[in-house]
Structures are given as structure tokens and as C-alpha cells.
Amino acid sequence: MNYVRIIALLAVGLGLSACAAVDTVTRNAPFETQTVSQAQRVSVPAADVTAPVAQAQAPVRIQNVLVNVPRSLKVSEANRYLPAGDIVWRGDPIGDRHAQVQAIFETAMLRGAQTIQGERPVDLLINVKRFHALTEKARYTTGGVHNIVFDLALADPVTGDIVAPWREIRADLDAFGGQQAILAEARGETQKVRITAFLAEVLRQELTVPGGYKTANLGLIQVLNQF
Image 1 (spheres, rainbow, N blue to C red):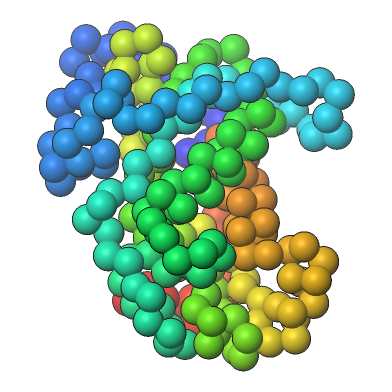
Image 2 (image 1 turned 180 degrees about the horizontal axis):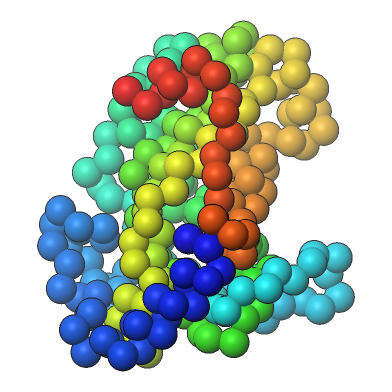
């Protein structure tokens, strides 16, 4: 969604707010049966003007971040070269993978939001659909692709009305393997560090670059990740 489209959609949203309430979503829609008021709202800290991060020009300013990782997403702990299930994550100790993925998204979106300082306050809504990082087998041999798919929308922070409609984002990142992965770990570039920084940049591009974020072409493994 480019800069001009966001402005237009926000203008339309202001005029049609009475019939665009978020709490009418159904189980098959983003956020499933949750309303915005029921989801966990994480407030974006004020931008640090001393931080060496360029402020991106956009018509919006993200006030809160709401991330939904549906419990219907299947978690796979299988140690395979190609991921199975909807969530494949090894960057945290074994535990609640849904909560771990939610925490990664919240951290990334809060970081990205601080680089976007427009005039219109909005809430950022994220609905995760796929989160494929690397298994142990792929991480220490072939490498691969971090394949992440999520839906994104913007809502009025007061009324909850959608002001920029849901859009699917496919965000793929080259995943280190073998010696490259070992050296990256030694530098502190863990899977979590790289994915978090990457998702923050995806958000910045989606809301500020004409045409929005465009995922990279990463070859055959990227294609196989789609199945």
C-alpha cells in the first residue's frame, strides 16, 4: 500500500467510520473472534529524537500495536530440512511458540513504528498467518529462508474503525546455514535478532515506500516454503 493510497483510504475511512467497526469480524476473518478491545494493546513509546534512526515520512503515526497469533496455527517441532506446520521456531527454549512469535512481532512492530511519524494517530493490527524459521537440521547445514506471512491493517485508536484495510504481507528473509550461521551467532546475529530487525524494516517500507514492501526473490527454497 503506497503513500498516496494510505492518504486516500484514511480520508474514506473518516467518512465511513460508522459502518467499519472492527468488532464485527468473524471466525474466518483476521483476528478471528477477537475484537480490538479484547486483543492485547501495546503502546508505542515516543520516538527518541536522539536515536540515530531516520524518521520516515508517512501520513500516520502508530499509537498502539495489536498482534494476534491464532491458536489455530499448527506448531511443528519436527527436525526437517523443510518446515512443516504453520509455526516453526527454534530461537527460544521449548515453550509456548505462539506467545514467542507474538513477542517477536510486538518488538519488531514497536521498533518500526518509532520510525514513522505522521500526523494521524492509528492502531496497527497484525494477524500472523505463517512463521517459518529454520529447524536445527537446516540451521547447521543448508540454511534456507525465513518465510513469514501476516495480515496488516490500520484502525482508529478511539473507535476501532478500520481506516486502511487488511493487506497480506509476505516477508521472506535469507536464512543463514552452516558456518555462516555459526559465525553470525558469534556476532550476536541470532535468528531472533535478524528477524526482528527485518520485520521492523518491512513495516517501515510498507507504510512509507511507494507500492509498499516487496519481498525478495530467494529462489527454489522460497517457493517450496509456500506449500
